Image 1 (cartoon, rainbow, N blue to C red):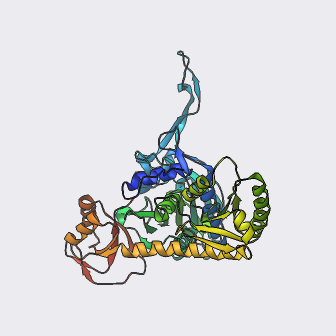
Image 2 (cartoon, rainbow, N blue to C red):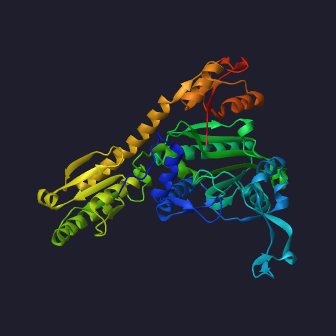
Image 3 (tube, rainbow, N blue to C red):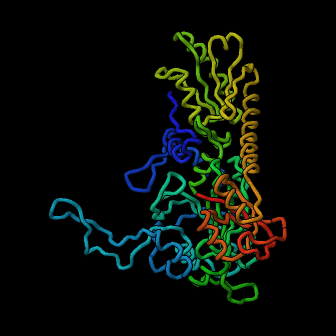
Length: 490
């Protein structure tokens, strides 16, 4: 298989696009801005989904499903919410088509909806309208619901996984009796996302609160996890919102507390999407293709036979079956590729491109020596191991790869996190090096917008549990109690 990817140094954006297509993760569809997630890409998403779903259920949440269509009037009930999403909404106006005189199809104007429907950009409004019927008393709280769904946000500039008009996600929506409980939930779920990013995606993230400029439309506070990609840009990888009583008041969701007093409930919402696929690709992969953390790899081990004669393959098949069963018994996902339609070298390149963590190669000499050649995707190292105990060997190597990928990403982030004490220094770092820049900010929207307009950098977050450090804003010189994270971002 010839080299198929543009190098990252040559053109990082093209490298990403090449990799998504060539590794069979996704492709553009006939609908502008929408993607087809291919089986291999969807298998990775399914693993992410399964892990997150378990983490949500372990923290007391249940899954439900709400309508794709939202009455347009619902959006207008929460002013900030409608303003934040109005430009991205797709609207359904009619419910029927008819044949046209010219032989084509046209909208049937007699089938106009009484109220237009918005295809959900997010589900707060339809869910809170429903919660009104579910919540009457403090006994009904907390209400901890998650939904796995698709949403539509009519993006004009799209990119596979990172920004598409339709994407897959989960959205949690919870109701609580007190502000403290809702805030605790908000921070807890941010922690769930951070743990998932570290333990499963092998991706270090920074937890923090967003500025008012970057806050979710309709939220009181928005918290996020921020990751650094290999091109020095940040990627917001998950958000958790403290909604206060905004949506409860908009939809009149009240409950009788223990004293018999009628109160509005308190809320949180939180979500991650198929954008995590983009994060996974850009955090770890190289010029040879995907580098997948073993915990999320659809195929953790591939076995490729090396032979010249059919009778040699029969002997290899027999030996591989024993190895394959031992790996499966150890909880390792394995594929034996004994297709006779492709040469071993082609297969090696294919599985390297697809990021399979370990490749085992077995030929007649390996059979004779009771050994197997093992190639690591992360370091591209090859080594001969005895067949005896190969399941334990492979398991240990997969753990080593998972840890090594995380350490490499953490080292990269640490080496690309800088401190700036003047605006001149800040601008130089952003322009020439990228990465995270820790700098003082005076807390005003005006200064934040000035920095963004002049450098394209945004405040990614104000870190949780920051080191308090008195200083002066790099732009205005006004007092600042701590540094915040700036970066250019996707």
